[in-house]
Image (cartoon, rainbow, N blue to C red; front, side, top):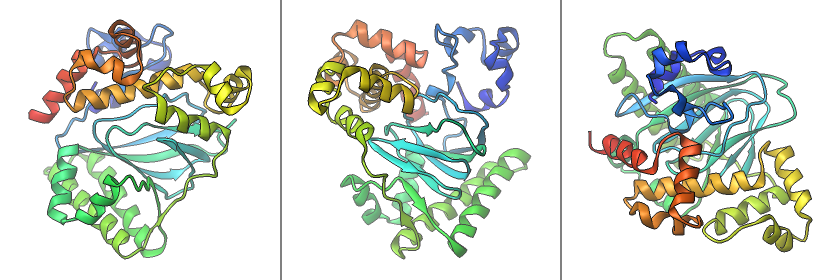
Amino acid sequence: MKLSQLKKVTYEEIKNKQYEKLRETMGEDIELYFKESGQFIGYQEMEMDSKYLDVHEDISYLKDSVSLHSHIFYEILFCRSGNIQYLIGDMRYQLQPNDIIFVPPGVSHRPIFGEQLTEPYLRTALWVSADYWKKCSEELNAAEWEEKKERQEKSYIIRTNGAVLYQFQKIFEELLREEKEEKPGAELFSRGLFLQLICLLYRSWKGQAMTELKSEKAALLDEIISYIEKHFAEEISLKTIAAHFLISESAIGQLFKKQMDVSFYKIVTQRRLIEAKKLIVDGVLLKSIPELCGFSDYSVFYKAFVKEYGISPKEFRTMVRGEQYD
């Protein structure tokens, strides 16, 4: 599903599965966007409308159940309000207003909501195609910046203040305005704004005008997630995790249900599927992927992929190739 389609859909239509109205926007295969339980999954494999960048505004008033997921594009989130934590890879961060969340393609991430939201979680989301990001980085000659990411020195949350923060705020405001008003030349104008944004990011990094936020002190949940990150291609069970961390299986199950609002096995499956998507993007043969990701066979992998994303691995590969070579 493309972003433009989702923008035309209301929360109530999705929540109440008003298929006739949804079919007008999403097409005849509307059921593909919902799990058997009725949960909407269309956001999982969102496609960009533009070959360059898309921007939109998201707001959550209630505790949402957002799956661990990844994208084939860069996602930059400007957090405007909300008392949440954010899980990226195996690192967990406490967010505050004006934080910038930077998520590269293929990196697992999801917000973690507390028991209740004391204020709405409001953010501006900027999606940048991998090809366009690469082109802009090359023109910027930001080799040192890129090498840092290649060395896995991850810094996913950026915190600024003063004049630099004001510049970031104005750029995100202008990006949203261009998207909403649809003036002539809006896409080109937005690309100009993005060039300012990436230059500001690079200048701030070079001049140390930003704080690259440290992750929260590791708790048991983080240690288990880190273990999953490193061993998802192997056999993982509640029994093996319980033995490794010297804790009962029931305690692990309760920990994930309380803090992640999802089961332990669901997180393991989602992490394996994220790696599968990355391998598909990299051109790995579909038949080789189950073993590389920890699935017992192709049938199990296929069923899990379709259930989570609403499309088959082959359909996902076709979608990716279309975006790369259009």
